[in-house]
Length: 310
Image (cartoon, rainbow, N blue to C red):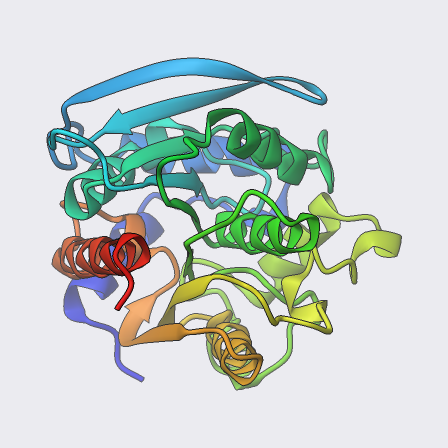
């Protein structure tokens, strides 16, 4: 598979920073590498929104910071609860601000970005519980609800969808999963082809991330590893994005196939020339902006059907 030239250019720019691989150091060095990579990017990216408000929600382990993006519409058509990527180890509200702005504008939904606690200081299920606390506290009963996330955030979104199904509430209209982390087994052709470290993350990075997030006894819990769930029926409509040049590609495709087999309505969008992380590279990678616009329109259409079914 050949990378899109702009995606390759982004990876080359990051490689020029000479940052260590995520698994080569400590959680602190991984966080520092993320911050250095973010500092090298242009500021003031993403669409304009009507308002942005920072607040906190009481969680079981303490306050959970959130950032709320209100789109430029008279009334939002839904709420998207967004969980950022970063291997459960790093990631900030600022780092994923452009993608949240763009998603709010493209979908007409309020986007609520969740600054969940990070591993290894806060291991499973603490980050998931932070997400659950925000979803429970801020969900508007009159609006359709969506859980969304990229990479490790996609894992948390999928885990929240499973928990919401199992507990019977809140009812979710949709889950949006961008190249989600789903399976700790790290198997498949995509790991063999793209797991060597030339495509942002490596298979060894993923093994290290799983070690930070979960104790061995928890690794097969379906809320920690949604691919381990034996029953995927009753989950909400799903939009699942994968990148062709990504070690995680195959586990995303397998999950989409299993969702379909369980009777879930699934849209799988497979971007053959993209690498892990592309979705959030707003105003840096044209396919990122284009994909958020397409996905935002799909969400708006799905929510219209939710409110006014055929």
